[in-house]
Length: 215
View 1 (spheres, rainbow, N blue to C red):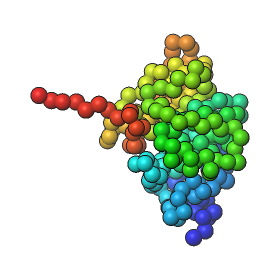
View 2: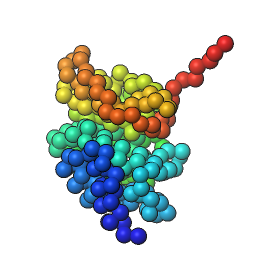
View 3: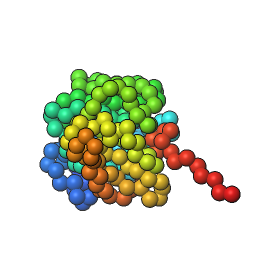
View 4: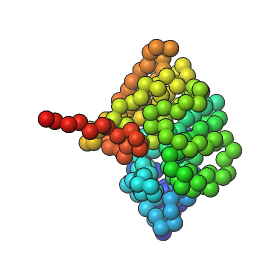
């Protein structure tokens, strides 16, 4: 299987038809080898329109969702980015390829260890281990925040960690009705919330909706 050709077809047959037309994003997706961020046994599936298991019960988002995220958040080379859920490291690599710096937080040490080996060529990534499902108390604000798993309700704590003009991407809701949101901070007490598309994504661990009981 020609993986370079598969990556080209991914961009042309999955990404472009989903209205991802930003040249910078398309070039990045075509040039960054996605198959290097999955297990060797999964490399032939790396460019398929599916979520891939990455261990610890976690999944890698489908390529078109990753592309939509990158187009929506519009990363600039001066941006400081916070990523919640390092996962395979692929989204981390996309972010770090464009941003000044990326702080990425992972709950599972095994996933973080693997991602670190895949991201060894980057010098602008800081790795942290911990539960960031509700907040990440590092006393910093960010230009861009990305939650790579879904949450039943978007924590206000992440909205307040945005700098003025900062953008936050999150998938919010409960299956089968979730929506991808882009939140932009307009002022100290004002945010613009935009619904981008409907989708379903695995929840961040510890961010699942609490079970309700009927009597």
